Length: 287
Image: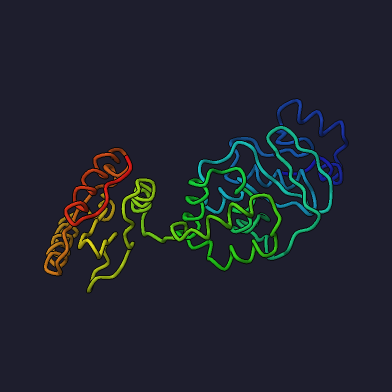
């Protein structure tokens, strides 16, 4: 990825650059930036081209940064770039944002590209997401260990009036938003519980030598979420049976759901769980 001005500086005339682009030898990625190598672009090549197109003081931001840090999927169609201290126009496939200045603590490098920090990326997209999606993005950051509570505190302190700061502050003030679970299936189950109105469990709370996925101590109930990746094979099967026996000797009932059931049969999961909780006096869910 090179700019046309770089090619001209290397000795090519404007007409030569234009001819190579028209003939297909070069591929224009954004206005003023071309690829001089044929074939499919490698990962993050378009992001590199976007930074070249915007020049100095530019960094990848918003949904592009959130994707790069693993906070959001899928890959956004448009590339978000923020430019500090200068005016740069957006163009097809490239959305440009502007700030007067940027705190060096709020940007870093990812795959050698300058990009918003995970916490800043979360703040940048906060105003455009639903509360549920914002919680999920924060949960992804915590699960991937790229965001810590102090990171959120810092970004909000430095940007108290930025659009989206109130929403992010509200979400981080919700203890559910920073619950750390060990798998995506467990997080899907937690989201199901949060939205159902059922009593909330303790996630990953040690019990003896084991760590159940979810525990309701006052109801003497444990839920384990099984996935093929971690529960396949005879050793895993034997270990799960030993855990269940330990939990029952400790006075707990045990329910096991598969990832597929949590994702594709949520009503069945909630009804089964509600019945188990009801046997110990728990409230029914708001289905």
